Length: 203
Image 1 (cartoon, rainbow, N blue to C red):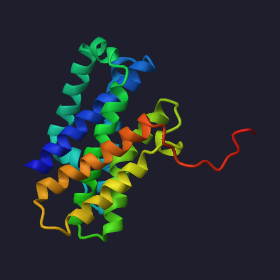
Image 2: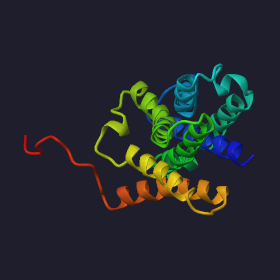
Image 3: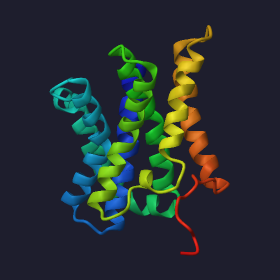
Image 4: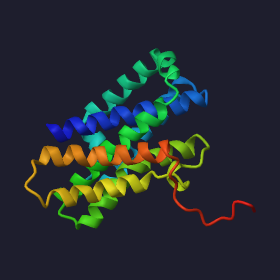
């Protein structure tokens, strides 16, 4: 049940981030729904395909589609309130990658993959929906810039495997994994910590 709740919360968070990007691009309601949908399920779809788990989860469980549809409707209704929060997109996106990193890692563990593969799966689950969203909205995906984004997911994933070596309740391990991703992302943005670039800034 806890795992399912985390998955739904991640779906909601990413759907809202998709809505905010789509509305910034002034897309029509159908366009807003499509962007929200691919943002919310893009990473999970790639994950399930890689694991050979088909039909993918949102095709088997209609609750995901209904959740995204409801989230889009509510986000559009309360769009003015969301726009007052200038950091809304960043916050929902950050929460989304934290939640989805755990979901992807757990899926890898269930599939009995090696820890490094589980971390890679968690990172793809967390990041791929945002990549599709940004490409469709004619933006360079955040993951391809020098921002600390995928790195936060990777560190969160490794923290999961570090913590399970200790006698800690699984629920607490899950919560800490999520928080590691969120806190690293927040701190990186707050203190302007970025990955090194291979380009000469003077060029």
